[in-house]
Length: 85
View 1 (cartoon, rainbow, N blue to C red):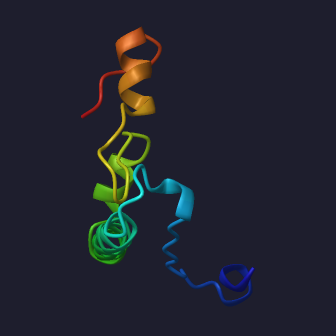
View 2: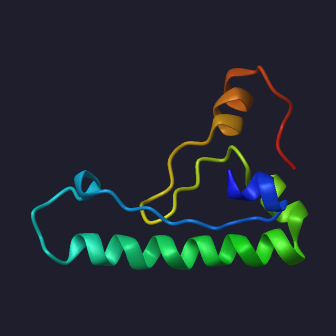
């Protein structure tokens, strides 16, 4: 809501307790740090290289965890979308 009212990007980083795959006390802080760093990299792209952020959209990149198979790649593989550039 604040973003709409101020026409300003607000970068939020969330880590939920159930995202940890193990009971290790180190996993959640590690995930929070990774996610924070990757969101900060996205802020740089948003401000200075928006075309890179657009190009990466739907590619299955995950903040904090290993990347997943992207929606664009899956559509391309299935023949439903043009090849990515």
